[in-house]
Length: 89
Image 1 (tube, rainbow, N blue to C red):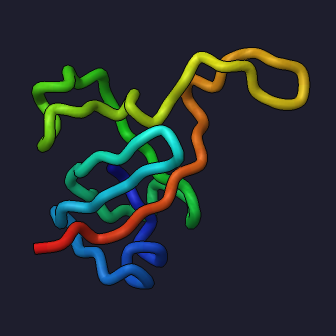
Image 2 (cartoon, rainbow, N blue to C red):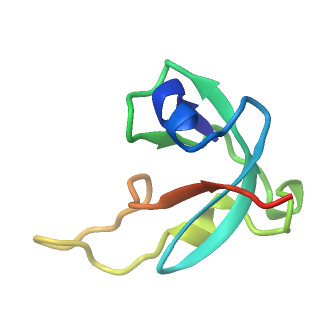
């Protein structure tokens, strides 16, 4: 998960740390890559990784859904609101 250096510093996340992110749909653990290639407040998960490649067997798509989004419907496949924290121990 690419995370901006300012966000990482605020959350005490170092490059390579395991982080937890989630929303009302689910959570997952993933390794952080601290970089200024993304803007503050933005997280980017690159690639198409199978669920088994993730730490807990849950891929990034656990955070998405096929339900209609505001204001006129459609699907939110690549843009989701999530929270981020450093994973415990």
